[in-house]
Length: 62
Image (tube, rainbow, N blue to C red; front, side, top):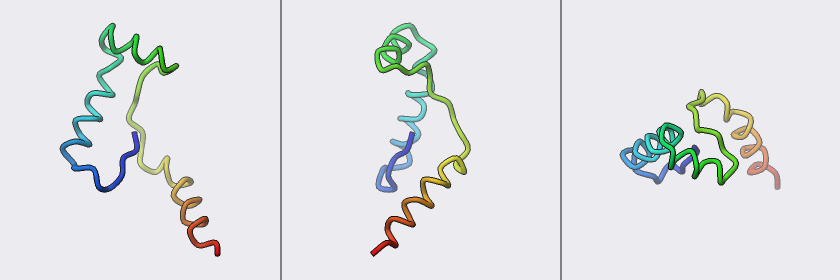
């Protein structure tokens, strides 16, 4: 999950908790399946380095 820096840390933590727990309940699995998602998992922040580099490159282009 990616959220903007304006999102309060408490809300960010709550969203993360809800999304990570969804696959543990039948209702959550049905909701995920309807969106074509099996589950959410935590990944290392460095996985977004290429997206950051692309964003920076686009912002520097006149």
